[in-house]
Length: 363
Image (cartoon, rainbow, N blue to C red; front, side, top):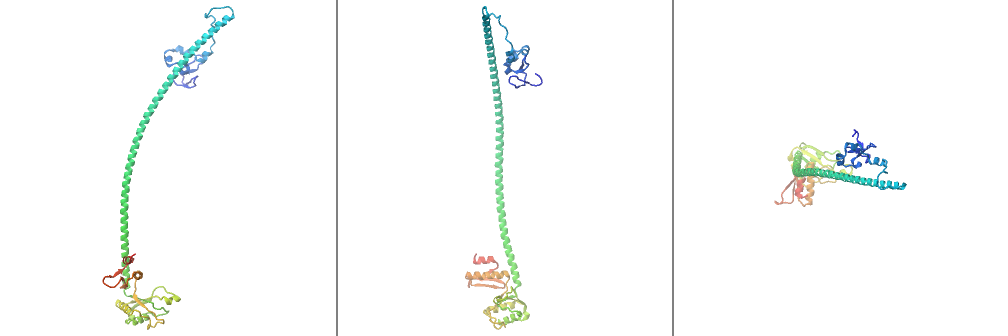
């Protein structure tokens, strides 16, 4: 076989092995199937001379017929017709021989095709069986991998559940700690506010607040406070007065006559302040008559001076006491007290913050 692959002149496919024959006449190559030669015949019967003298079917069909007139087939008669009959008989015999040879060749070709098909089928069956074995092995590997992945996923789910439980426990603990811290912080803040308020109230221990005194321009507040003290039968000299002034927002127009600002007085000694408070409670209902103030005479009030927080709490305590029919709401030394009624069965309560109001009077 040459270096380059031959092409079969019958099926036009490449011949990749040595099993082929070359026509002696046309020099074209044919594989064993197209040459109608079995492998057994090719290797056992055909010799080198037979292979070199082999001709294809096309070349055999093109060869001229030989003259068989001298063949003694039947008796010879005179004339042309006798020769024609002999030639016809010879042709029929040759045709019969050719047909017989053709049938033998076709049978051999069919056997070769059937054998080739059987070999191809067996080869495909083997390949299919090998592929099935490989697919089975791959399927087993895949099942093993899936089983391992399933185990890992289950383990991961268990770990995640455990972590979630731990996180929930920690969150609950943090929430409890935060709540406790918030509560403790609120309590601490409220206590600090109460202590600061008590200190501020102690700084106002010598102060008094006189309300409902008409306000005039150019008024002498020291003389006015002294006149009010004389009205209450208390000896209050100018030396006992540390400071006196009106506090709060000033009003103009008609509002000035209706809402005069309170007068804040700081005395030198707490005993003088207590004496003024006691006289004001004894002479409850005293008016500005005889103090040198113009008419109409008004009723004035003397109370302890409270911080802003205590003043708001005192106002709230009076409102709640009135709505709940509590009889006594008062202040003493800057402290706010409430009592429902007289008697030992009604204790005294001190008010320091809004929570105390809620505990005593309810929400």
